[in-house]
Image (tube, rainbow, N blue to C red; front, side, top):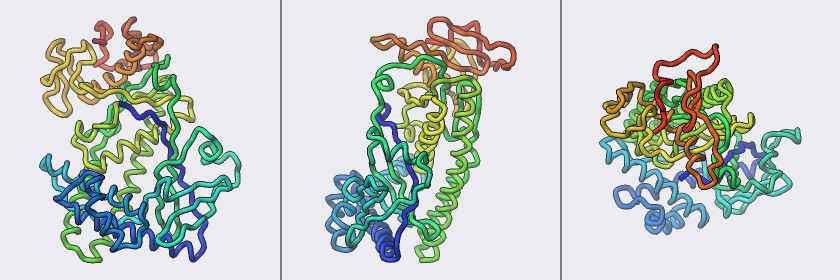
Length: 415
C-alpha cells in the first residue's frame, strides 16, 4: 500500500565555526569507514538490518569513533547497500561490493534535535554540537511551512559536505488526512507510469525519455566497478568525483521531468496525479538502485511542485497495470510481448506498453472511489483526446486538443 505519510525535505546550510567544522568532517570520515567495515563483514554473509547490526556493531564501536546510535545506523546503511547488490546479481546483473565515498552521514531522532530557535544539535565523534541554520531572512521562506507547523515531524535526515559548506537535508513527514487515505477525490486524474526506456509516461500520451539517463547510470556503474577493482586512492577519488557529477546530472533530469509532469497536469486541468505504488517498482522494472532512487526522488519532486498548485499526488496498487488492456480490461501475460509493445489478445488494441500502463494507473485511482464503501469518488481520467469515467464512458475534448489514435471513443475503456 502507499505510504500513509506525506514527506518533504528541507535543504538548509549550517553556520559552523572552525571547531565544529573539524568535528563534522571527522564524523563524516568515520561514518564512511563504519559503513565500509560493516559492508566488508556482511558481504556474502548476511544482508538484513538486524543480522548486519549483530555481526558488525561491536567492530564499528571498536574500530571507529562513531557513537552507539551512529554505529547502528551505519550497519543499516551497509545492509541496504548489500541487499541491492545481491538483488542485482540474482538477475544476472553486474554488482561489485559497495564502497562508501560520498561526504554524507545519516541522522535520526536520537542523533539530531531541531530546536525552535532555528538551531540544530548534531551528534559527532565527540560531543554534540549545536549549530544555527542559515535560513532566509524572509519569514515566508519555504522551510517555514515545516518548521512552524505542528503537523510536520522531523524524520531521518542527512548531513552532507559540499564546496567547503555543510548542508543538512532535514526530512519531514506528516500524516495524510482521512480524506487522502480513505476516499478518492473528485476531479480529473492524470495517470503516470514510470520505467526504464521511458522515465515517465502520462495518460495524456506525454513521454519523457529515460534512454540517456539510463545509459549514463549504466556507464557510471560500469566505470565504478572497474575503479573499485583497481583499489587505489586515486581510483576512489575518481569514483567520488564521478558520483557527484552523476547525482547532479540525474537531479537535473528529474527536475525537468517533474516539472513536465506537473505542467501536463495543469494543461489538462487535472486535480490529481496518480502514480503506481513505488514499493516494488525495482522488481517490476528491473531497475538498479540508481533508478530506484530516481523514481522516489521524481515522485517527491512532483508532489512538492504539485502541492503549490493545489494538485494532489497519489499512489495506487500496481498489480497488472502493465498487462491489463486499458480499452477492454482483459489481463494476460501475452498482452505484452516486449518491453515497449502492448497488444490486447482479446480486443486487438495496440499501443505503447508504457502508455497503456499509464492509463491503467489513472483508471485504478478513478475506480477506487467508485468501489469504496462510501462511493464518494466522481473522478475522470484525462487522455489526450478526452476523458473517461467508469459510468459515463468517453467524452471528447472540444476543438483544440488533437485526438490520439489509441484513445477509442466507441469502446468502454474500463474493465
